[in-house]
Image 1 (spheres, one colour):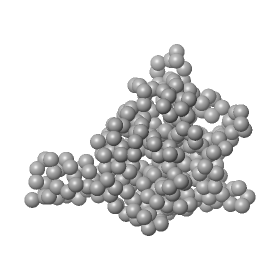
Image 2 (spheres, rainbow, N blue to C red; image 1 turned 135 degrees about the vertical axis):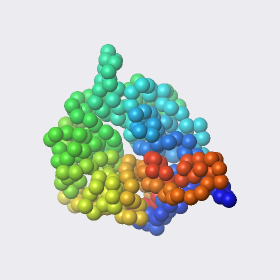
Image 3 (cartoon, rainbow, N blue to C red; image 1 turned 90 degrees about the horizontal axis):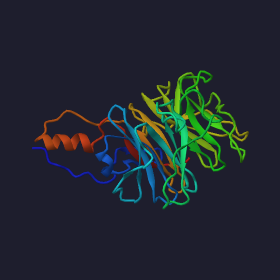
Image 4 (cartoon, rainbow, N blue to C red; image 1 turned 120 degrees about the horizontal axis):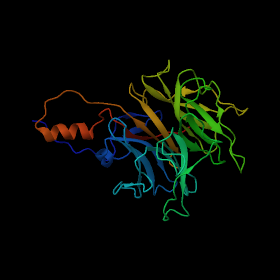
Length: 303
């Protein structure tokens, strides 16, 4: 007989580089089959993430406005197009994301993925209609995963023939008025392979991102960190190690320096064959366990 075990809110899965547990952000979020792209406000009163259908055909943005993770809400501007990879500005008044929605109101067919944002006057105000970041930032290729330093510099993933690989990390420099055109980061960041989902530190001292099937990787996608040297140049990226990375995909990092917490997405799986008491036991197992679908994790870590 298989006893039903109630899983705690935070589940010990492995250990981070600092010896702290890698934990699910919330067991309550298992109601969603695929979750990814987490960000949280500086006062931890709001968190945003992406929910997707199993094959990622549908993609929408969700907000939770309390620390017990109850009452998640679909963001009101989400419609029949894909929305993903939210990033909240420092003051909480602008939310950036990637979407394939039409570039103008007069169009109805979906476009390539561009970077967009919505605005509000304060956190109790409604969000505006989505605003495209324009052709100074967006190109004919697909742009993904926006993240901003405190000085306004914008880092993101771009699929471009001018890059080193299919997916590369770029930066648009903010001069206080307009953004520069996208600048490809150096070969210590990018390669002929796949680099994507970069998170920039508030002071631009380090960059977290995913490299796919790298030679020193654990398999699939791994999280890496690159730090700037005294000359302001990006150093060689280092794998965050097997205590955090697995043979499954780890991606979508977000770092909260106030709590020294690294949030990330993983498709890790710990399912093993067993005999189940009944159908409910089977369902509890595949819902509450690491089941190979995207889930949100966190761990304590310093950079």
